[in-house]
Image (cartoon, rainbow, N blue to C red; front, side, top):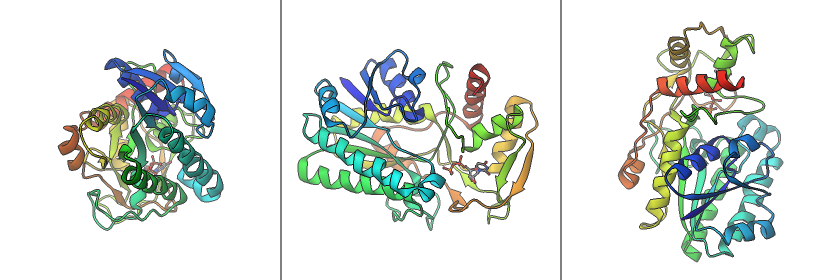
Length: 320
Ligand code: UDP
């Protein structure tokens, strides 16, 4: 089976592409390289193109049986400052991609969504039937695409799996690909920059949350656990109906706990200082991953320690 991995030169897409390749799938990466990195697509056929370029996409789709869509802008803060950019790419251009798929013979589609569609959930751990009420434009764009998939599925027989990721982190254990965002906003890579002296300290965004130690709790999931779920999602689409599933571990860690885990794994003290809360950060976001477990027989296998070890190896190797 041939899979078009759209956004496959990005962080999560490149890990999915590598996992697919290791499992014997034929993979074509399609990426406009606006935030992706050519190096992350090394060893793959790479088509450099935009998701709104239907002529280019049609040619690629003719050679594929399924699509995984990772191509999106994903900075919450930027989406607040520049929603136009987010709605343009994550909705308008993404719908153009979906229409190109519908004009092809491909009917299997896997979509990268986010826990941000839940906004500030009333209950944690979060189940898929929690109300989807995003509190920032990034989450709103992902929800808009989820809605389109549901409508297209009902009307046109498209089969989709929507995966709502919690906090993706870590790097492939082989050491050839990993996380490399510019600018970097995510907790674990920022902590690793701080211990390397690439930034003065980690600013902890608020220590007055209603959690045990006052810092925010998140569900950190290894990027290769996400990648494994994508392969299972593809197999699932061969035999079952469309579904939306959370991808998380079900276990939350506070910012302080992540800092301690990094100190334990690396042997370096993390310089920190307490800053203001970051706008739009809920106190706790933890997945209930039971549905993915039930439908895909999938469970996150890698621990927080393994996440940090793999990210640290990648950082040291590449200097990112
Ligand atoms: N965080 C922090 N300092 C930073 C970056 C992140 O304290 O420099 C906290 C943030 O408030 C959140 C957690 O770390 O509670 C994870 O943030 P990240 O941006 O990695 O992911 P998000 O949860 O926003 O998707």
